[in-house]
Amino acid sequence: MKQAIGVGVIGMGWMGEVHSRAYNQIKDRFFDADFRPRLVICADNVEARARQAKERFGFEECASDWRAVIDHPEVEVVDVTAPNGMHLEVNRAAAAAGKHIMCEKPVGRFPSETIASYDAVRGKNLKTFVGYNYRWAPLVQYAKELIESGELGTLTHYHGRFLNGYAGDPNGFLSWRFEEGQGLGTLGDLMSHVIDMAHMLAGPIAKVTSNRETFIKERPIPRPGVGTHYDVATGDEAKGPVTNEDYVSALVRFSNGVQGILES
Image (cartoon, rainbow, N blue to C red; front, side, top):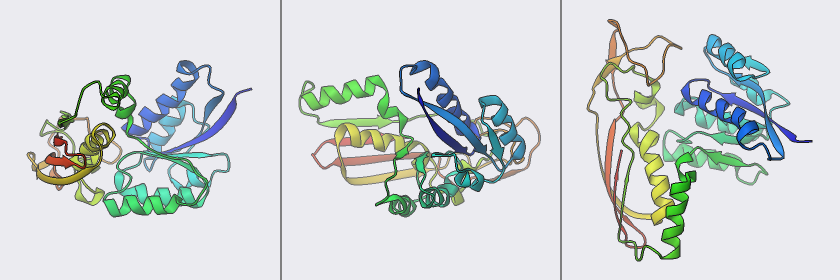
């Protein structure tokens, strides 16, 4: 009999949907695995979105308060896909409750919050994971093998980039990703993927000089619970200021002497 692992997801926006869909695919794509995820409860502060996610993905329960996920006795794994500004508080609560944690990146709004999340689980018998999914792509794993085997020779330079166009339309909604109160913008959202892969393929970074810019200074203000950062306004919505960067570039020098250019 396959082991059932109780999962609770916090935040049922775009990424919460992606994770929930992935849990359901495990039963098909990894049929031979000796476990199955059990979708116990999902939570979102927009109640209608939580109810829709329950029906759409097959959660047994839903809630509008994220603490219901932490407190549920049958939840073993807490999946954190809430806005970045909530990550530290949720991680601390999950760790205190003895739950395993899957947290989307960035773990904290700033490095200090990421370290605080680490401190919350240190010394506890808990499994933790961060959503740097690109490192697991077969092509990336193969590139890692080529580098480590020496087949490519001595690595001299590394160019990492993550150029995503979802924010290119000035009428894209002013979602939390564009608000400074939620932490670093493109640096945390996209460049962190680039940095993670650079660490994996080329090694630790010793020196860095960086530049950032905000090209679109204001965006339409969305109604709560309506749309995601991929959606575009169609009416005469009021606009608010963008307080996060939407472009980052960096020149880096790795500890092993490799030269690098990173961009997102």
